[in-house]
Length: 379
Image 1 (cartoon, one colour):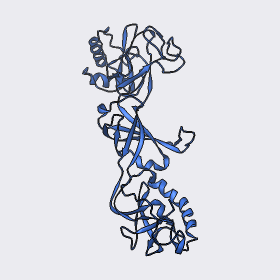
Image 2: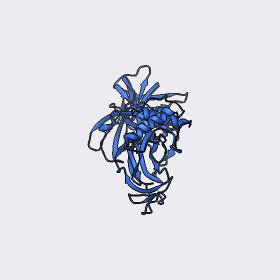
Image 3: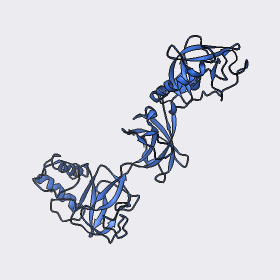
Image 4: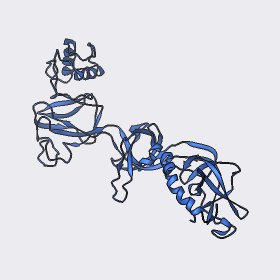
């Protein structure tokens, strides 16, 4: 291939390499093997087919780890709506507090509504003879709290009612053996109170401020939002371009650096299924939402929405040869090569590609060795 043909080869490479980078997640990798371009010692750019600059073939460990900017927060925002007949709000769990099973969420007319765990809503008053998933949820919670003596199933029996009476007695309630949404609200797990009411709505919760917030003394109506809550566990969220989603698969180990410099281990716990355009009007690259869970969430101190740094631990290839990515040429016969510069001459060598790192790629091929110079575009 002549010197005049190589620029075309590099232009063809841009299209072909884009597909490879999308699959390999090349933009989300890190390596300690970077080598800056250096001018060839013999000949000017284009002279005797020489490239305008060169890089170096290096040998060492290559990793496709990456670093991302994330945000500290809590997962799964939702509303806790008022049950029962409504009335005057007399107490609310404070913002930032964590409410666990059987803990108080709020009080209406001095009567507490407590949290129980489950995915089904508390939509009716349960009594002997009732059947359904909500019955099983109630029984699971009663058993977890130590009020046993019944079979955990989907049937509300006299034994279930007896356990409910014991639970009611523990809270100094009238022992009816029935229980409904005026006493219990279900959520999937412990919750963290984000704010009172609907949080910036139109005041549908009955608050006097007109902003969706409510306070003790306000009237609440059935179905109106009383609290905005999230999951109690601290998580980190960030986005990656869809082409780099392979660098953040579920289970990928991470190291999170908090604003105070504390580093905590964790792993990718959820990967979005849909790519959406970014919020930045200057960057509409489709991106995927990534969620990270800490190994020890209790150690993840910090203010919600604080910026953090996420180091994704990728695969490492040991003792491999690599070159700068822009050293690759798209060969006319297909595949990729590099332009080896030796003794003032340049020759094309076909290579097999391996792992991509940040700015570098693993290569193998006949006659290649550490320290060789390869052509790269001018810096």
